[in-house]
Image 1 (spheres, rainbow, N blue to C red):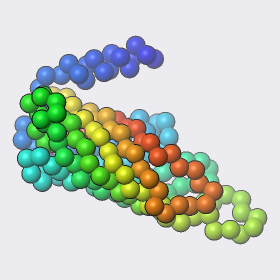
Image 2 (image 1 turned 90 degrees about the horizontal axis):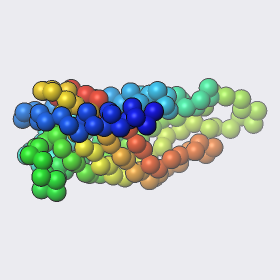
Image 3 (image 1 turned 180 degrees about the vertical axis):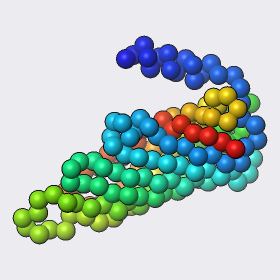
Length: 170
């Protein structure tokens, strides 16, 4: 498994082509779907030469009893001066704030008739690096650190989110 991951990273890092001046991108995270049963889709719109805005939607199916859907936004600054890689938005290194709201539902046993569901609001930040694969496709490792603003009883939360988006830019 370690060799497969290292081989994949080698291929991703050795790709030399860069994005043209694309304005939009759409991506999904297949690894999160396979590992955590969470489906994430992200749309990104370039706003200027240094930043972009994203909207992302999620569907969570954590167990037989907990499920949710959510929507979030982020604002990205592309740090072309930090890593001199000749990449411009919407590719390369980006950082910025993010926020999301998720609407949870619990369908399991409930002998006390408690209200387990509700909404969870999270704010935090993200760091991502978008690697081009050819002319329009890309892979984007992303790390999100989120802090709960409104919590749901009996539902655990991990503040660190790791993902790998695969997508298309135009």
